[in-house]
Image (cartoon, rainbow, N blue to C red):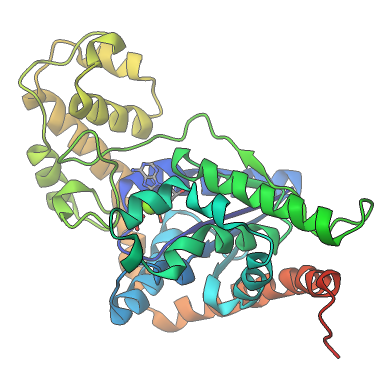
Length: 339
Ligand code: ATP
Ligand code: MG
């Protein structure tokens, strides 16, 4: 079993990333130790240049993200932790796969439609071909499993379609070039919404810092953000059905449940009938309790730039060694002379 997953260094790691992805990366890493599986986790810096951005921010965010991931529990000795652009086989394979991917497939991607919006003519080509690079990210490492949230299911399907078409067109049936990756569905992966709008997801690129809890926020900031989080005037219901039509309340209860590793029902059994004046401080304390050890470790790691670069250097070396044989097979299958 080989698991591959990435995150864009587009900003601060936030609670949504942690509860929806990174906490599970750590769990998978710990399970992998027992089962002999291999986990590859990478910073998708090549993906990050598909939207307007500031180069100096990307540099700082890349190192900041390594520190944040290690602080969350990703162990660079047990998992392969690397930066995408330091493993050029990802970008090379993307070009080869561009010959297989179809315009029509990419045109149907909802992320492309959402992110390009009405300005398709002005969107970068990279934003359009983003899912082909994502396919290369997993196929170049022969990933067997890819953990995906709702927002990325369609892209994994596309990666499978590309792999299948490439194998059909260029490889013999008994010696396929690519493994078809399976989705790794995590039942406990939470989807966390913005603190300012219960129907938009919490995201790194939201311009309002009040919309998210960063893994690097200190205790005062966390308490303040939760205090200011949008809510409605009703007290909490005593069962799950009572949260219907109350996205902000549902989100805060969901965060509590995910952090405390309780069901929403159990949280409501404890807090049903309480107003937000009581629930918010309890939630704030729980968030602070869970995040403060991560925060402390992050602040320490962030200071040691040489150590962060050494982690990336070592990770890239291991990832390149895994990727090269597959890339060579792909070149050969396509009939490209390499001398
Ligand atoms: P951006 O705004 O730059 O797209 P993002 O916050 O959406 O940033 P990504 O780098 O796109 O973060 O995603 C990293 C991982 O975090 C993915 O596995 C994604 O499914 C997960 N994720 C992102 N936002 C949330 C959220 N609000 N709740 C749960 N999981 C999330
Ligand atoms: Mg995103």
